[in-house]
Structures are given as C-alpha cells and as structure tokens.
Length: 341
Image (cartoon, rainbow, N blue to C red; front, side):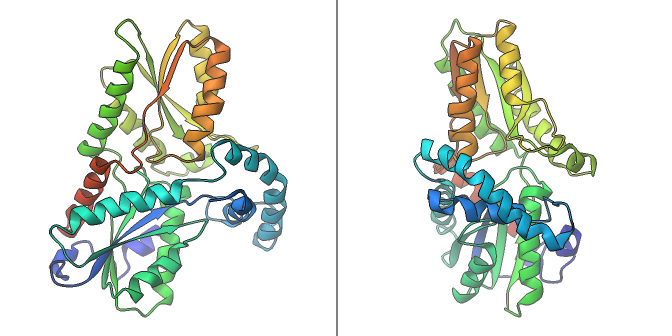
C-alpha cells in the first residue's frame, strides 16, 4: 500500500515545482496514533486498534476480526482504564500534537501567510479522513504529510498512510500531497535528543555514572523479519544519540502471546541493577510526546521495577511535547519537503 501511495499521481516529490506556497493556501497534516482522552473512550480506542488488520490479524479470517476485536477490547478495558486513571484520566497525546502543530504554524507563517495545520489520529477522533476533509473545506490545495513518529513502521506511519491512500482513492478533491516519511537520523532531531540526554545526565550529579537506556516501542519479531525498517532505524537513532555514553537499547510495550523484538526494558533494568548499576537515565526514543507509554510504563511501572531492584537514581529524559525547538525542527522538515529534499 505504501508503494501504491508513493506512486500516486497526486503525491508530489517536488511540490515546489508545481505549487506556489507563498501565494496559494496549503497545509501541514500531522499523523499520530491517538489515545483515549477520557476513560469512557478506552473501549472504542482498543476496539479500533484490534480491528486494524494492517497490524493485527486475529484468527478465523477477516470476517471475525471485528467481533474478536470487540471481545478483546471489552476484556482489556478495565486494566487499561486503571492505567489511564493513574496518569490523570486520559491521554494527552492529541493535546501535545496540536500544540506542536500550532508551533509549526507560528514558525511557517513568518514566511508563508496561507499555511494551515491539521492533526489526524488513527484510532481516536479526530480521525485522519475527517481531518483531510477539513483541510479541503479550509481551501487547502496541497498538504505536506508529517508523521509524528521519527521511525517508519507499518504499525504506526504505515497504517496511517493507508488511511491517506484510501481517502485519495475515494475523493475527487482538487488537492495534492507530499510526504515526510521518517526523520530518525536527522541531525537536528539527534541534537534535540542529545540535549535532553545531557541535561538528565548532568542532573544525576558529578559522582554518578548513569547507565543510558534507550527504550523504544516493541514490534512483533515477525514484522521485523518481514523487512520492516523500524528496528534498524531505532538502532541508528540510539547509535547517534548515545555516542560517548554507556548505553543500551531496549523495547517496551510488549503484550500478548506473540514473539516480540527485545530485549525487554523492564527485564534489562532489573538485570543491570543486579549487576551493580544504581544510576539510570531512560530515553523513550520512539515517542516524541507524553502519553501512556511514558507517563505510566516508564514513570510508574518501570520506575517501580527499578526501585525494587535497587536503583538509587532513576530519571527519564523530557518529552518534546510543546517545546518550540521541536516545532521549529518540524517546520524545517516541512520546508525541506517543499523544496523537494
């Protein structure tokens, strides 16, 4: 499906050759996963995830996917609801995505007065097709698509782009698109990561010798074996951002009976603690803003495991959230794509 999108006649690799960004109305469209804003939204959020056959193929064919998804969502919801209650009652992902988008608009508006920004979520409102329609209603004639995932993976950027492709196939709107596919090794992104790492390391104190732990969202080993680039891209990010530090790469959010890529973040922290490492800094490298994976899985679940294992100093690097430097970086990605880079 990604290949089909990349070959679509309305996807422009060098949009600046066909579109006047200074005079015509256009937009930046941010893709993200979405998250339940209240605990009442948890069941529908889980149902939408387990209904997505692009990333989860439940047994007994496509006919049974949605009934099984509804059953699994109902069974898992109480446990997941408790986790969201522990981080304030809902996910802040949409809020942070919109604030980052607003920062991008402020930056780009200095040079392009007709730019708008949009944020489409894959599994919760506002859904991607609805926001694409909103961009049409706003009069935008071109959109630069920016995934809020540094690394390309079928389970994140890929499934969101399938939604974009299907919308393109179904609409006759006078609109073209261009795509920023990934940005895992961009120097400015690495610089921003490194700044947060250095700050967390300095706050440990001069006598501390912290172990640096990069924690990325896990994917099934089967997906990695299929040729999905996510794993290699994450490894490259860790290599670039961790240069000069004693670091290790781990994976979190491993659930269900499938074989996941590893090593597991919690088990690694426990192992390192038992080896005498009492100072640790965790970097959630596949996440750019706070949500359940940082606020619960790292700040609560992982910290508790570290405390129980004897870790004395535990810290997590800050997420970018509404950091203006992050928005400026994203604006730079958009301008690079406008120029065909």
